[in-house]
Image: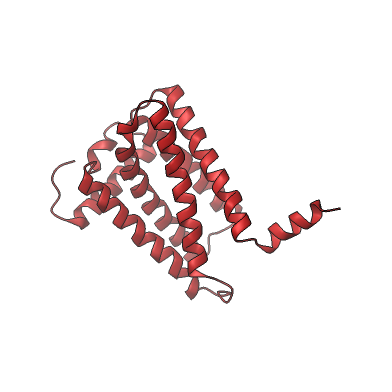
Amino acid sequence: MPETQGFIDEVVAAGRGVLALIVGDRKAPEHFDLSQSGLVGSFIGLLSITLVSALVPLAMPGAEDYSIAKSTAIAVILFGFQIGFAAIVLRQMKRIDGLRPYLVADNWASVYISLGQLVLSLVGFQGEIAFFALSILVIVVEINIARLIVTLAPLQIAMFMIAQLVGVSIALIIVGMLFPSPETQAAINSLQP
């Protein structure tokens, strides 16, 4: 990526990079600042959108039971397990050098996908169709990050994706135990004799 003038330029360039990842453009890495300062910038973007995502539900109807702390804790747990398992599999493949580029691209992808999800929620487009579309988008972006940014081979991409899926699944189990919802409690109660 060419030298940027500031954080706003980095945000715009990363947006172009995320669009390039969505369409599978091989020039996607050129849009991201994969240096140490680029990693810091991507975390600033990720923390900013996480804060906005945690605050927006307060303005929505039915926010009486909503907790910023709970929402933020869930986001941190999911992120930690996803990154932890990604780091483990990269280390096993002797490609730990790909962790920083992965983090930069994944953080920016999370920023823009979360922003899109917020906009869809605010205009009332929610439900299973929106969830399905965003899920497909996330899978495409994650595969293209592994392929174009981290430059993994096809088998390595499969291992990388499975490791992240396992990490997020474990995180979801932990989240379910730490923050049980009425649906979780009903499922647990139905299993008891």
